[in-house]
Image (cartoon, rainbow, N blue to C red; front, side):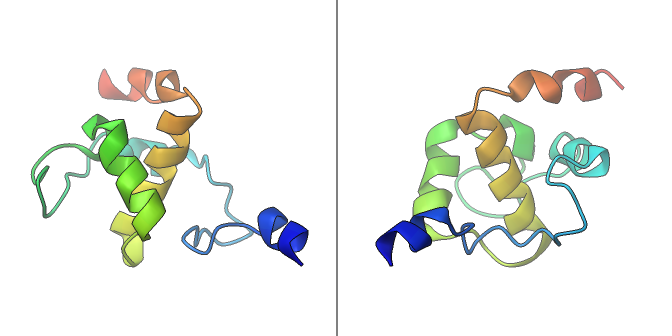
Length: 91
């Protein structure tokens, strides 16, 4: 049972199965959407510090688009893939 739970996708990832998590439109939103509340209010999602993203990952991401973007940014940051969004900043 525990093994099956470990293989299950996180509850906080609500991307539709027909939508890949690394959708280019989602990546672009990371460099255009700002955090709407909290300590980092007004900061781009792509510029949020890793410890803040880790906190959301441990506590649960908020519902809706902001939660999906935070979860995506956490995955990118955690896996050292921030270079994926750098070209989008220059647009």
